[in-house]
Image (tube, helix red, strand yellow):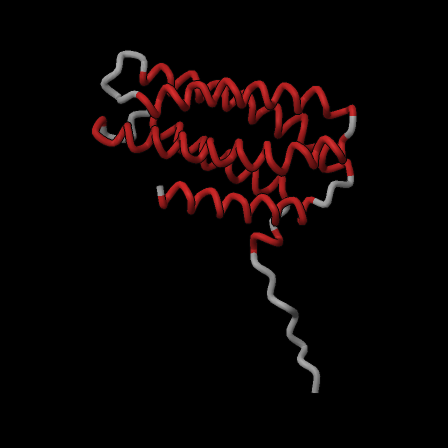
Length: 164
């Protein structure tokens, strides 16, 4: 008698690319909120800032390696300018990440750097979620396939960072 069970797929394989990226956005927004609203003791600020930096580094890398190239192909000229702007925004955030990773909460500009990074990331997220993602959703991109690639690469990068 044939089995009526369907093959089990991992949840990562079922998560579309946009849902995965929005989940990352929400996770980082919560960390920024925690940092900025004093819900973390001063002694833990450095650890939280490093956690924010690590999450943003992985997120930017998977977008740049996988999502943006797929979006350029699927969205064509309509999304080209948005993706170019997004990559420039990533560069600015990477500069702040480098400054934060080299600094400490005792540095005069540390909290200001976290605040500015938060503002830039919020701006970037708003543009992606309100402008880019709707265009990509309509583009015909295979969001589940790209989502699976993003999830796999994110897991690889996260385990590399944890091992370092």
